[in-house]
Amino acid sequence: MKQLTPQKFALALAAPLAAAVVSIIVSSLAVLASKKSPLLAYKTMWEFGTEGGSLMEMVNQATPYYIAAIAIAITFRAGLFNIGVEGQLRLGALFSAYIGAMFTLPPVLHVLAVFIIAMTIGGLWASIAAYLKVKRGVNEVISTIMLNSLAVGVTSFLFSKYFAVITEGSNNLSTKELPKTAWFPDLLPLFTNIGDMVKSLFSIIRESLFNVSNKLFGTGFEVIPDLSVPEPSTGSINGMLLVAIALGFIFWFVVNRTRFGFELRASGANPIAARVSGVNSKKMTFIALVISGAIAGLSGLPAVLGETHSYNMGFRSGIGFSAIAVALLGRNSAGGMAFSALLFGFLEVSSRALELIDIAPETYVIMQGSILLSSVIAYEVVRRLKLTLQSKELAKVVTA
Image (cartoon, rainbow, N blue to C red; front, side, top):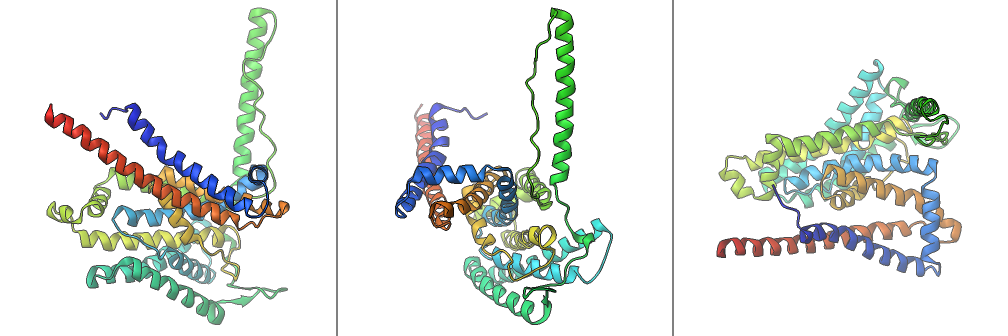
């Protein structure tokens, strides 16, 4: 069992703390450039971002980030870099919305059918880069960047020429609306019911303990404080949140607890050693890219199944690129990426309040970029310090 020394504990905290300090400094300079107080900006963002409706919107924004980050993390673990997530999710969203509106199935089956369509399209598009990597030796970074541009063009062409219909009463173009059997439910009523159940349970326990204390001591007192659940704010929680959570658990289990995960990590850490030990690194490369593309196809579904129920002109862009930052900041771990996805979602939502104090809401992009850059640099510095520490410990063992 590894012993946690004060030195190792300090190194574990050094990277996130250094990244936080640097990002706050850079963000403050950006706010000062607008001749505004950084403290006022942060206070405004915090107050707006912690409101009930804003928190729900934060979760909704973070959900596609997290799904797309898992897609990217799979390739990172295999020593690859899938930059083409943005194109894969757009194609998956377009085809799943268009084809999914052509038929009607029972609710669960219809949703599963849309999932399969999105994953198939995303996986097929990623398989192009996988083939070029395995058979022709083309760097996946170059091929996925090119495929991203091509995907945007193909999506725009198919949508405007063949898939789109004019929404009645407006000039907005969208695919035909999905039948309600393909809609993902809003989770807010579920969470509200759970909150009511918790409130009722604690009320019963408090009342029982109060009565017991009254009989024993002649006077009643509250052993448990009142844990009242506030009334829910107006809004919704995208049902795809459950899918994102499930994917996070599956990702963690497969990568850390299965032979496939071991071979994936081995081929990424040292392809030559992996081949010597019997791992087919080319096969793992192909599989990793295809699976990554399939999951990327799902990251466009929070909008299609839970919000607009179609693919339209206002489809959210930039998810795939932001997910790269989420994966890097989260160190390709399920828990770390969940935290960074929520952080980016919070920044995106709370930054909207900056307009109230005459600060451009795009300032959050600078915050996002500074967090990413400082995190990458800080983690790399800490990684090298850890290697130096391990070398010194090994030298002590050898000379002892």
